[in-house]
Image (cartoon, rainbow, N blue to C red; front, side, top):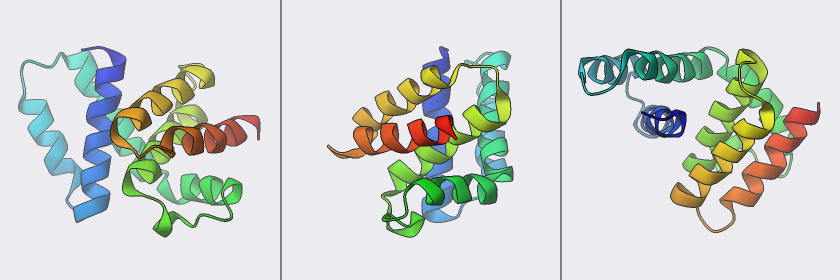
Length: 131
């Protein structure tokens, strides 16, 4: 599984957790039982999901700081969770260049978001990167 596919899987879990208030650990348990996904990918997905959720309060502060006209609760669920996941990866992991992380989030926004999502996500993440 490519890192892009792994990010997509992590995003889907975060989206579900946010939308229906499901338990992330249950979703990750199902993921870990899928033997078709390599261990390395499962670890990467788990780290993205659990890390994003662990640091969500601080991440949300950063997002809010750079999007004062769009409170988190008004953002589409897709945008909010792509921003959270990408911000986590940029701010807390340090193993991937921020430009790559932003590009990956923008590409996922083109698939799952509305026609403005990719530009909005790019702008907010670029501000976070520059902070």
